[in-house]
Length: 219
Ligand code: DC
Image (tube, rainbow, N blue to C red; front, side, top):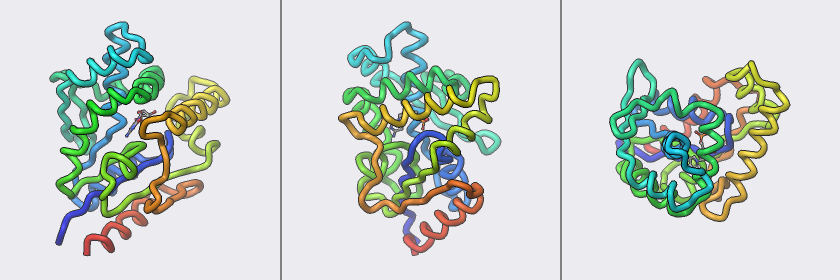
């Protein structure tokens, strides 16, 4: 049976990461979280005192990172230059910096070859914003995973209950706007992507739907 490449795109807190990881587990595929790469560039920029809006400096950082991905206890670990950044990249500030560095074409180019290298062999589920449109335009299955803003904001708020719901929602909306209106590789549903709306649905149900689509395409 030919193993396929699966692209999963969508806005923040649409459930992409969890869904894509579980789909990969069920199919025995590799899971690639491209958001983690942008987050790592954002993290290293913040640590170095570099403004995430600085295109040249952030592109230099992106080009120099040696990434390594590993699984431990079913979870993805991300290493940058041998340092484990898996937890550090999940903060809200880093998410904001990731969205800012992701605007720069030179940063995207630096990460693109790496992402294609991981995705072109098949047997992979890759999640991000531009996987179906730019990174893997020939993916055999493309999914655009969406959910209503209120529900996505609620999901994110549950991860950061110490913050105000209204603030979490406003930040999420601002991030979506930045990701979908940038000039290079904006968040967009590919013409041939299957739209999956996870509003009001459980993770397992969404995973089952995508796994069924994948099995039909690789048969
Ligand atoms: O999915 P995430 O929240 O971990 O992604 C963090 C940021 O990285 C997101 O706001 C936009 C950027 N990103 C991107 O531009 N392209 C991708 N393929 C993945 C993420």
